[in-house]
Image (cartoon, rainbow, N blue to C red; front, top):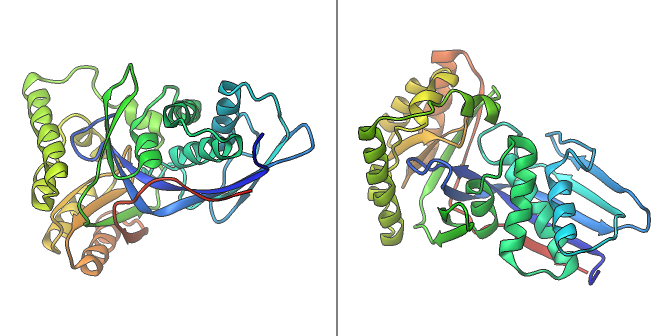
Length: 308
């Protein structure tokens, strides 16, 4: 054990980001989880959660501690006594990669204590934390939270991640006061899709990658579409159509669903206050739901704030 204490931040993310189901991810600058991990002289892993949002206190049920312990196992670290303080910056089940932020945060914190710099090892441990919640290892959220920017999984088997630096644009996020479980959102998806839908999604996905490389915000907006998941998940979000229309009318360039939902996000160059207010009013008037809304930008990934 090289160090005794590490403090890190780990950000929210938008999985799928339009056509990239289970592949694309966009890191957000905010909100973030803040995690402090300390080596403890005891034999237990003690967790404390701060902030407005809850998280499990049992080490085997909390994605942050679980990912931290899995990384320690992979490094053949046999020490078990740790204390972890988690300040949750995002609500679980919001569609902003809450569990992934915690998983990446826990893995990065343990890596900082052990002096591990192998990001592939950290990524795998973080994905194991995601597996704890979803039942399988998904890399879209954890890759974006770990590497920052716009990421995509180019090969699931080898865990090959490609990171691109996106242009600077505004992201307006609406969080309705409902919760959608990832398992439920995945369960409504069809086992098979039509060939035209698959071809169209491939076209949008290729266009999105090129648009990110070219840093072309208008082209990003044109390719922020989906026929594989969003059409089916829209029904889980009351008022989605009204929110989308209101955001576009207020000046948004494009609108889509964050991850499994219920987060709805819009991208824009300007006029973010007007777009945010329009989205909040639309879901209130069309579905009778209250919602939180905020404005952020693409972010740079998990950060080690301090280590000692």
